[in-house]
Length: 180
Image (cartoon, rainbow, N blue to C red):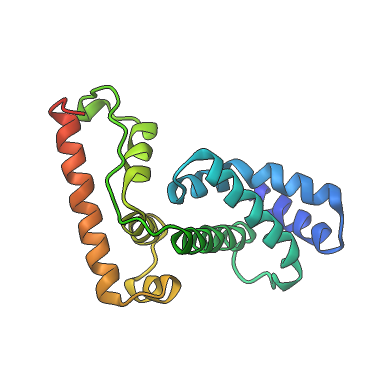
């Protein structure tokens, strides 16, 4: 409750152009939003770029926040949309086909997988799989919403999710068997 009140006050100050409030808002939400970006990005560098671009959009669109829903949720949606936009831009630049680029690291037993290991697996997903998996399984969007966001059919969204799950399952089985 206290953080919500703080966010609301910071949003009001940001709307008035208070640069110090913008800095405070950034520091309050940056690490959490970087975590969101990390799920969509291929690298930490790309995630940091997404984060910066996302916050520029947040501060530019601040007047558009009507207070319907949580301020943090509004920021998160802008960050996710920025990640999707970055993905689309990168896909236009890349003409290579999806290839598995998983960097084989140390072997881990499945029960010892930690957050960083799981994040590494999700980040190793081919681009289309990663985007749909994150939007559906983590962000909670429907296939219809995903199809509109990524400009693909609902069937393609479902297919990408199914393939992402299969890909991750195969990787987890390899990790469990010590083949990674």
